[in-house]
Length: 386
Image (cartoon, rainbow, N blue to C red):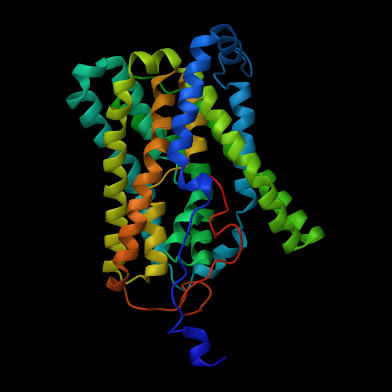
């Protein structure tokens, strides 16, 4: 291969586009909010029947929502390839920065911002009980790093898809160990709420361990028996299922929250404030550290986005398991997705405008140089939700 072939200096950058669902995700969330509130007000008996369907007495794990969240998480776990982790050992700085921000900064900074706003600045409007609930919800949200939606952000910033996959895979493994203790420690320390640790463990097992194991086993078996092309088509077929499950989950949650939302609609705006600040703070910190350490832009941009966005499905499931589907904590996690898409798109735009801050380097994992084209539907905007 010639130098011109490997670098493509005259090749114009491809315009990156989200699909219709991802581009207007905030609109779909708002529509689900409206449908859910309408259902909660018009059909209260049916909504109450759904709300009380749990896996055992006082388990707080709602059966309809659990089933829907499984439909979202399993296709995402199918995309995780842990064998790619070995390829990052030659250039580990980007991964180290991402992990430090995700696990040593992000949950703690969110606890700080949440405590400042909910327990002090916004306390006269929301009261101490809801302050604790909203604080708990934002902590749960921040303690769950983003996974699948990161592939969309990586694509939009010309990120290295192989390195992005490594960052996602390692974060999934760390979540198995750190998610429950971090949530327990921060919520107990920053609020007056009790955090049943065993409920957290059950949430991790039910919403991470089982779907992750199912995804790894299914991925290995399908790739071995059907081949990579068939597997990619299978992922694309599952994508609409994931989308429908996400929207149905939101409708259920907002139906369960109908009375709270109609009585406290102003609270949604208040919850959005510390979440937005947290996104910009952590993305800026990660991006700045990447620049300081001279990490290539194809790693720095996705790393900044991973360090700012959240694993929405796990956060919602955990908030529901701990405090119920009608809780303020569950509402706070849902506000996160309403805020995240427009905010993350603005971070993508900033990363693209500052590409010249970083030197041109080879792909951090694959060793390729020049523009990084998306390799499959997972990286090109067809992946679905986080």
